[in-house]
Amino acid sequence: MIEIPKLYGIPLDSFNIAEGKIKRNQTLGNLLREYNLPKGAFQQLLNIPRDSFDLRKIRAGNKYVLFFDKDSTETLRYFVYEHTLVDFNKLCFFDSVWAENGQKDITIIQRHYKGKIETSLWNAMIDNGINPMLANDLSDIYAWSIDFFGLQVGDSFSVVCDEELVDTISLGCGKIHAAYFRHVDHDFYAVPFTQGGIESYYDLEGNSLRKAFLKAPLKFSRISSGFSHSRLHPVLKIYRPHHGVDYAAPSGTPVYAIGDGKIIKAARGYNRGAGNIIKIRHNGVYSTAYLHLKSFAKGIKTGVYVKQGDLIGYVGSTGLSTGPHLDFRFYKNGKAINPLRVEAAPVEPVLDSNRVAYDSVKAATLELLK
Image 1 (cartoon, rainbow, N blue to C red):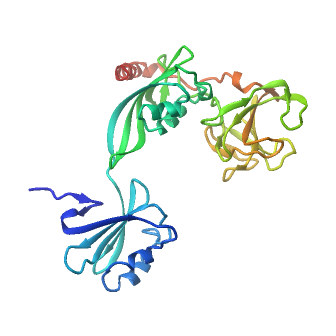
Image 2 (tube, rainbow, N blue to C red; image 1 turned 90 degrees about the vertical axis):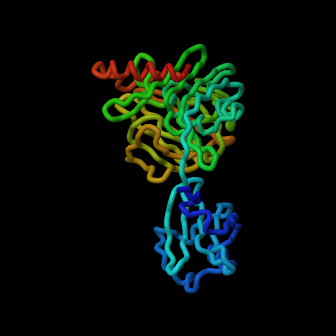
Image 3 (cartoon, rainbow, N blue to C red; image 1 turned 120 degrees about the vertical axis):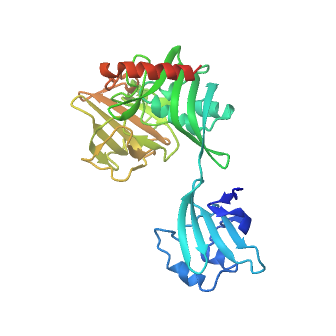
């Protein structure tokens, strides 16, 4: 028996098809009135629960597909709205009207990507025809061991991952099976291994790549001013200590907590210099501060506990500032230290009881990277 091809679960041989994109200020009602619907369909449409299909939440630019009867009436039978590249809503017009939600099929292809850094990791991805979102995935894996603001020309990478595609469009990489980075004449391997029911990444010796603190509170930016005991202040035009590192980034760039801890200060307009500031106490020794923020993330306030990598705020230019940047400060026993020189301890390595299993996974990982 020949299988009839389907689109959104609808047999293609039974209907004529048209497609378009939602126009600016266009409502679903205005769009559907252009077509022949079954009698009473509009009234039934209003009774569809919002959790099935919220008629108000169609967005300009999103794709829709129409399915019509092939007879002379050309009655509209299905309206499919693509909420995202993957998720869609389907309105069905027959004796009754109802809504269905679905997802397109995702094709997974294992890829092996390689490249060299000329300007940035993001650009290296683009230059090699790779979805640049992979740069974010790598920055997450190596967040504790490689400072991605300090990549150098000639650094290289090799990654084996599952690329996810919908309609030949890349959604980015899912699982990363193996990764390697050559940075400043050092080799950084990432071996995925599950221990205690949690998958994490380890180096070739079995040490976790995850450490107590992230290397930086931003994913991508550049250092515009370093730690100094005497710096010419860009606003005051006088020499004074700058006990932090400035990361230049566009206004609104997400800022993340570099480690677990309790927010001991979340103050707007804390003082004329710092602007909006968040300070986190990580333990009895270390604390960090994030200055000049545009705003705080939802739920962030004094007394709240955060986890490593939690979104806490957004880059801004509040206080004494000449432009959008994050002034990041690191304290040890209350004394400011250079954040770029902090060596954080790794979390638990591969246990001796798991060593044989890990060595097997490591061998398979190295084979993938060949």
